[in-house]
Image 1 (cartoon, rainbow, N blue to C red):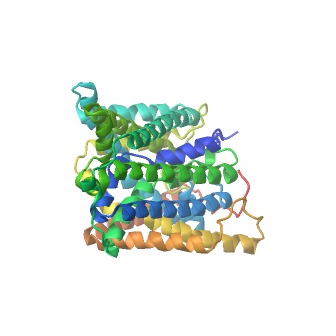
Image 2: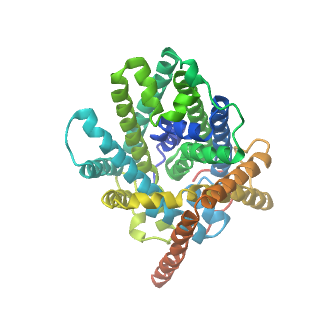
Image 3: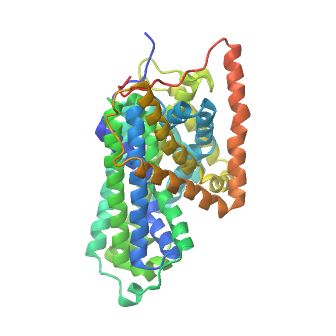
Amino acid sequence: MPVRLLRRLGTRDAALIVMGGIIGSGIFRNPSVVAQSVHAGRAMLAVWIAGGVVALLGAFVFAELAARRPRDGGLYAYMRDAYHPIVAFMYGWTLLLVSQSGGMAAAALTFAGYFQPLTGMSIDPTLLAFAVLAIFTITNCLGVREGSSLQNAFMVLKIAAIVWLVVVGFLAHPATSAHVAAVSSAPPFAAMAVAMIAVLFAYSGWQTSSFMTGELKDPARTLPRGMLWGVCAVVALYVLVNVVCLRVLGPVGLMQTTSPASDVLRAFMGARGAQLIAAIIALSTLGFLSNQILVSPRVYHAMAEDGVFFRQIAWLHPKTHVPVVAIVLQGAFAIAITFWKAYAQILGFVIGIDYLFFTLAAIALFIFRARDRAAGAPRAGYRVPLHPVPTALFALVSAATVVTTYVSSRENALVTACVLLVGVPVYFGFVALRRREGLTLAAPSAPTNLPD
């Protein structure tokens, strides 16, 4: 009997994976980034709420995609089935080359940067980042339940830390009148657009939960529920964090700081507050790192299963039933990037990639609905409320985010295009290799609303 991925994760796991993919260290700094673009307190909160609405629209879209195509690979599989395998490959290609691996390396180095001030131990940050990545890689090789439990534990701790920050914010003394005052005029559209980009990136990450479809129990039900619950919980936490930042620091104080969460805790706890927020940020980066090592190898496994990647990466351990080679590949790539200091400069060139594929995912839902209707497939267990309006709105906002990102830096657009285009000959190289081996490429999945 062939070794297959085991469905050991439920709705709670899916929700915590969603939250773990979103919450990193950005929420502890991004309120000040937004405040520097839009200076009025109400406008700041409006941007964060609007970003939460966009994230929720995205969760609606991905929830129905998961219900209609409960297959391995998530967003990778949606790109393959809606368009062409080359589109899906370019998505997986950018994950390994830039998005996931670079984000993991950055998270590991961020944790290492906070480790010495917190412990007093002098350890080379690069070596410490290497050690953390290696430990998480090994843990995830032991089984999906072990990897998910580690991710869940970090996520619960992160939630507790953010709730504590919110409670402290309501207990601390509010801002003085000098800091409550702010520019009263409405911020220009351009400023709102720039601020929205920072907010949308703070909310992004929920889509990675779709990578775990092959290991969720009844994914057509558990993934939509977990995605919606997880995104709603994050939106509530993010808005509350911004409320307490405005309450304690005021709009002007929030504009002037680069560490708003630290300033909120310092206002209540004094010098100990700064050390506590450093510990919270370090914990948050570890949780994000654990989440990414758990979810991203499932995409490379799906690519290998489809015949567009090295076939060894599709191998599953006969006892743990996890893609060990794919997990090790992801860990090794992230470790290599931690030693490549210049790589951090490349991350800025590809910030529009996520929302490019979000746009394609929203369009894919229209494609799947039309195909399933023509094929007489059973009604999906979850459907986007008031479709097509929310789906079209999410597609438009995602496309506008891509355009805004690239208009602000043509260099970013050029490098991003190069990263995507380089994947084209690589894809055809794997196709040719597959054909020489006498094997056929995997066909797109048939319309179905039932789990494997």
